[in-house]
Image 1 (spheres, helix red, strand yellow):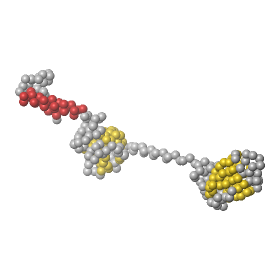
Image 2 (spheres, rainbow, N blue to C red; image 1 turned 180 degrees about the vertical axis):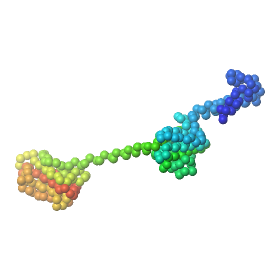
Image 3 (cartoon, rainbow, N blue to C red; image 1 turned 60 degrees about the horizontal axis):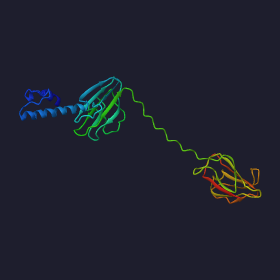
Image 4 (cartoon, rainbow, N blue to C red; image 1 turned 90 degrees about the vertical axis):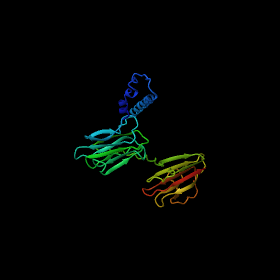
Length: 296
């Protein structure tokens, strides 16, 4: 309306037919000069309205299997006091799938509402504002009605949307978090040397593995020395998982003891320079395992 008013005024007749269009300021009474200032302010207001970009108005009827629409503001913000609607009609037997690709409305006061039919009297599918991108929505029939309303105060960037008769691809689920690495376990035979040291079943804070068969061969550094073995923690399945201690370098040597359950085994001393410790587990119940140390 302001632009129509400016056209009506024309920078001419309201100033007495003089040359405002030519850039001259006519020698007219103060009253006419005031009207000239009003014309200039009106022109500036028109320029600001145009700088704000386009806008929507009334109802638009949209048809076809696919398409796009928006609030009409382009890269600018939308206008205040809007009441716009779009009626999307797809071929009979199809439904409307609506997807928003951008969305920014004043929270609590500017709204996009979706209806499952041809008008706002149909069942409301959803109502949205704020900055969160709405989920894709669908109608039950071949028509969907979208209404966009704004109040008189804050304006935002608006929205862009598209429709289709083909459902959008489902969102890809987030991949599950990676599994923690399994605890380190023991395996085979480990040779231990030195005047003292420590070893364990290898499970750390976890339980040991099923079906293990591990050995530690401890050799004192000097001929004539013996190996003294002690346990600082011990928790094995009673009956079926075992720690066996041998007075030599293999399981064919004399067995000094065999232990399971939760009681700490007694300190054990070899008769010679070497001791073998063997740990075996079955396929069922697992416990915390053991920690041991030796000295010579």
